[in-house]
View (tube, each protein chain N blue to C red):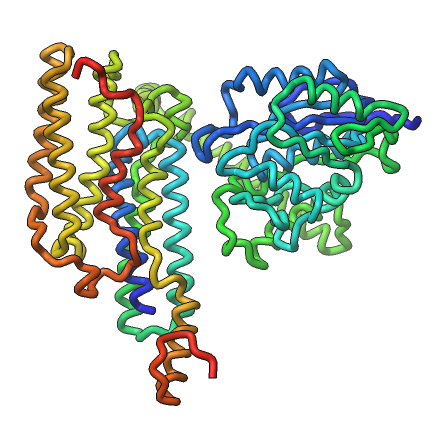
Length: 143
Length: 411
């Protein structure tokens, strides 16, 4: 379960760094970056909610909370113009149909394991049952 | 046949549509296909073939005909406009499905299945099929009042015209498996409603956010707008609170006026000048003039993101792995290639020099990153547990987002 949070944080670190770089560019005036920022903040909020509910050791929890809070600060501090609009429509972004902020956000899709914290809990429980009865099958096992 | 007048403020919502005969039983929805996230909410230009469909429908006798892009606000606007005119009994859906949004599936699912208690369209394949901004009665009414004629993927104006024509025939008329005729106005009077805009950006809402608290926030004001009656002390309390708020705001305005009158003219002038100073937005940069220059500028924009991602990964376990060095080497090779292309280009020397300097900076930055590919894969040694994905490779792929302009032929 700790791995789940750690992997998510690894993803957010690289996403935030990339968004930070794009915010130095014309993306600063772009609705794409603003949307990506919102998504990241929401994702971090969800992660915080999941962390609060999780049963991981308090020391680990504290550590992850600390990282989460620092990520929140970075996400909220991304440089954005007061008024944003699509820079393709404004005629300034001419890279094609792609969008850098959305592309940066998609780096999160690299994290596919562990699937969800809930699923991991289930797996852990199944493994415990196996250990009790001596079975060595991985997961999930129904006895 | 019974025909009635639409509500006074019909059509209640503005949008990208044309208004035709108010007594016609058919409205036409043309799906406006644009990749998800690439068009702003206010679409600036409509492809001519789409515009033709919209116009043909109106010319043939539709009540309303317009485009639809989003699976939330767009559908909500359609609902408001349709329920405000009881004469509209058919909805013709045509055009290519909106990629990413899947708006067509959302509209079909809405009419077939409706919404659930989280105001989400049941059975829709759209990303954010939420109807947060309109009364539930309007959604119910819309589903009762209209029959959907699903002509998704149909782009032939003649077929759309035939569909519209078939809808207002007095006698049952066969059309593509349907038997159509004008059934007259819906039994109830027009329903006037507009978007509440309680949720301005439904596309930003994640499904896990829609909990009880969220729903209460949406429902409460709607009921109050509908005219919930307050009793006795409750009413007095509400009025007093509002009066207090008005008084506070008036006091703030009065304070500002006094402040302004008391300050000497020079201070005010300075303040005005300060306010007039342009706020920093993005560093002023020269816009690329030629396609050739644009090619290099766009590539450099991509490298900025890639480099930032690499640096972040270097602080992580990727520092000791083999993928980051491989990606760094690959980026370096591409950069060298870009440099060679720049040298061959016909850009003025001054421009070339400027771009080369930037390329050199990137190259230098890359050299500061790990290059040793003999290090073990962090997945193999059990340190990287993110799944089959790889941050380093995906970061390098950011460069693929730049697809325009193509590499100039002379380089």
